[in-house]
Length: 125
Image (cartoon, rainbow, N blue to C red):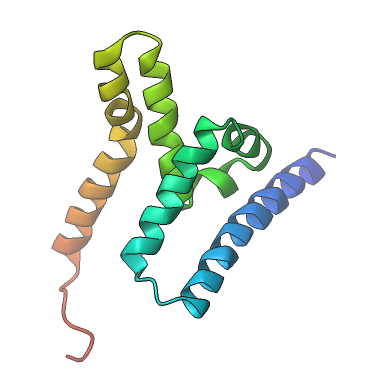
């Protein structure tokens, strides 16, 4: 019975994460927006949906399906700012940095390790 709960959890995460990625792919296919602009739009949409109180229930329901895409990074930053704002202005400014520090640090460390292990080259070499 517990296996069904785990399977349902995976299905919810896949459905929500897949829907976010499918929406991004539609934007890529039907607009002339660059990848950087699309990333910023999705990150800011995560911030806006968190501010409106919409993203938190989605995170609670879908878990990693809502937190792993770039909109989840916007959610993380906004959530850190809102928690910090309860303590004061300085904490509102440093809250997003504290909330995102573990993920950003891990990305930097693992990127460095991969750069040591593998030789980078251009696509056409």
